Length: 361
Image (tube, rainbow, N blue to C red; front, side):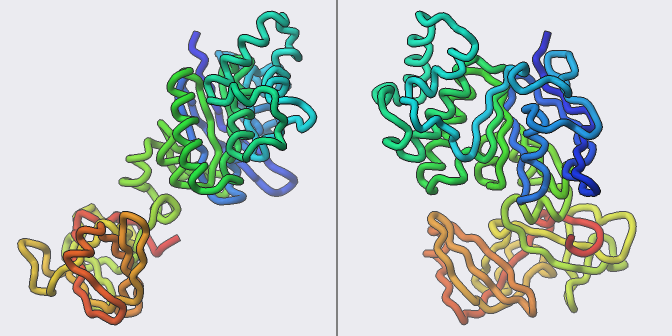
């Protein structure tokens, strides 16, 4: 039988506050799913209900074909990795990893080989006799991973496990977690507020806001086709333009300009919100440098700031009263350098717009 994890209209309220509202989701066996959203969106509460630390107010959680709502955490065979590592400070690395095996009364002769196997998996076998205080934060988190995997859990749950680490270690451990998941074929559910983590790790992302799921999909689907202005704003960076529908098909009014939009406009309402990613905006040499582009979609503005973001250079350009972000590769910027105060022409391709009903929200 498949060991899929199914959430069926799961809700949780604390008094009058609904922390999670009717979330339905099927996590397939061996899948890596990220719950992504801002603080207070309900993602950790949802994870804690899956783990058994919280009981749903409504709905069902099923695993391996049976309802587990009332099953205590120890009976669910789920591993849990906390943000704070939660290692036992008075135990060695070996004893921390062996703890769950001993609690399950695994034969002593089987424990040492299993612990060494897991320490090899996370690359820390040579630290087996050290104590947590003798390890870096990244090493402690790798030991916490090994401990969570020791009992061969069917699902591994991770609650913002990298948020306390510095950026370079986070990037390294992201790749390690993904490698472990692929090697072991284990189902993982990972909670994070960091969009970069979710985009780089997940087979599927569940974007949450105010206790509700706003969108589910692959990283590419979430980034390229966000279904709401919230998702477009939270996942990645977007420029938003509040516009009005024009009588002509495919046109919207932005201030005193008409812009052409490739996507169909919403069926109802006069107000529409356009979103466009900074990397989709083009920097032209001159306003007349069209080369087959739509002339309506050329806007002029003044460069406010130039920021180096590693491989990308970001321009903030004031167009009327709107600040537009433009991302250029280093090669593009070297070919067309810009400085604060420069007048520039921007091209907003019709196919680059994402369209949402009403104003931004």
